[in-house]
Image (cartoon, rainbow, N blue to C red; front, side):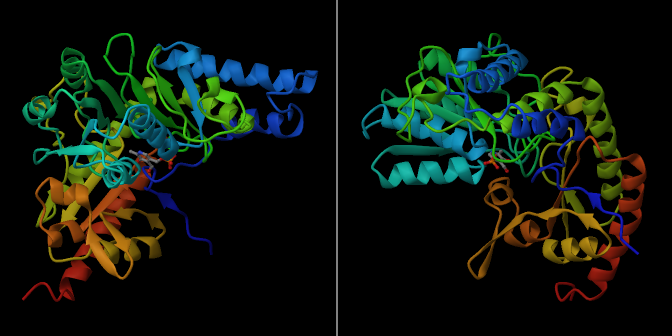
Length: 394
Ligand SMILES: Cc1ncc(COP(=O)(O)O)c(C=O)c1O
């Protein structure tokens, strides 16, 4: 008998919405032209490409000419950060936080190797950036602040409005990695001072390998790859038109408040259910209504749950859950032979043991309440079993 999958790893990637696939397939088999070709097949593809650009731009209140299509979030982050750095000399200074995705963290490490000055801002125990330190770190030669909007591991949603104001006051560019927050937290580039935004499709039920970088009019970037004149001469290479069409459709479908309400309800149920167990802690912002920072908006991504269980290893929990058909992810990253605890979890103050005992459960619009009920039955039983055999309990 085939086991039913309960997919709770939507922070890693999501199932493509069948409606997205339907829109894309036309651009593989019928409107397959190269958008740079002048003949009618090329122009047909170009028209689809530009409509997609317009619709994605509209979703953040930007102009179509401010959207550059890329191969995804990692490339967008590289283009934003290196694009700004390489347009200057290596005497400039760039700032980021301690809880970035590897595509930002390692880009900063690479810039440091190349002689650029870099700073990593600390976060508090819920993962919020220290705004005082941020403001104090901005100096004469600072050119960019790059901050993750919704954290991929612990779900913290940064106060980008305030950070944007600081950057404006200090006259430095502001980039956000909005890969996890896009369509879950509203972004309006006319209301918030942000110059560069990284987006992608595969976290919102769109295809993998497609993303975009919002580049505010007038912001100068050095392109990273040479070749054709595509994407306003900022990103050479034939555009992935079917992927981009799918991206635009995914954005259209995701921009629906009932998805957010649905995921929030499931998230809260799962968090409340797991916090009722012994020796557990929620990593990232609490979901306590009274502690909401930004008025009616949530402080935690509507689809993120990250929990540490004392005396057990996240990898073991993940393995047992997988055996029951439940997909989750852990807070550890396997690097070569050693298990390194997540830099995000250690940045918010977890010990390596606590970090190793954590799992991330991330929801998507296709998850159901029945699935959550089942997880709340299965997971406590797994924890109990693992604790019985845990060498960590003396
Ligand atoms: C916050 C964040 N930024 C960037 C990325 C990279 O995106 P992509 O997989 O499209 O390269 C991810 C993907 O996990 C992410 O969660």
